[in-house]
Length: 435
Image: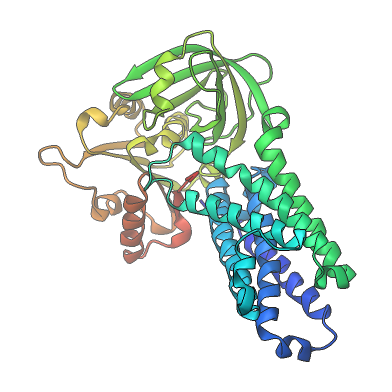
């Protein structure tokens, strides 16, 4: 999602790229050096820009709190992470293509690590690791790659960054000939390596973690409601935030997965509502009361505008996208003000509306709440229409519409609302994807 604080991140990335270009230009004796060797020049600057973008990719994966402020939420952080990774890979590919074009006679030496210079071989190894990681990320769903396998493949980016650092330090180029450029690239690449090592190996030990114990487990259809009590400090979360959870059980994997916190911030017991979606979540039936859990976070800014303004709120949830709205809807029901809060819960079938009864009870206890369950494949069902949403708006300037669910649904509804003159800043999307 985005808010007023999410405007600084992209300009900082552009600034780092601009600084790289400037230092590269200053490394030349004159502009004519660039014009005289166009293929080599394109290859050089592409390599430098690709390296900087991969450093940003590593930094954006660290989940450091300031990044959410820079980009307007962790969902946006991961969107930018994917973009800079792909663009960085394109730049590295351009580097290789133009390097081969400038040395056409021995092109094979630049794609196979059989060069007589170890510095070049290191760059080739790094290139192919980047290729494998990027392709696995792009096609993870199409090839049905398991999450933990993809995650382990992703860790090899750390090795690629280390090889890149060694490649840049050893090869005779502008970075070795012009000290300011060399310092900038060495420092940035080393920083990228440090970020990668932190998130891959040290985050579990020094990240923002809190110890909990499972006190209750309730399953409804394919959704687990898991309740945990703190065994020390309580995680200091806000409405609709999420956390990464590692369950400490001999029966299931301890790998980290992100889940929305359904509890209210003032409650001591932590509640997660987790839908069976993959191999890992299907093992949660082996989780037992008394098992321990490490909870990392909190993250997310979906509830930022809701908690900092008194504007009317409309929540539109698709499937398990209801999770972040459960706490916000509950909080609205406890408020003593004139805010009007409406919730549309969209599922395919009635039995999939896991929280329907809970939401109806909340609505009955507060006159400021409106709740509607929309089951698209039930008789007389169909999809939620923009007109139905508009009927709940009494003031377009003072109503925030929150969307969480399948991307196609969110994009379609947002486009429909904007055609009805709802301003973009009054539409908040939670579009969190790890892959």
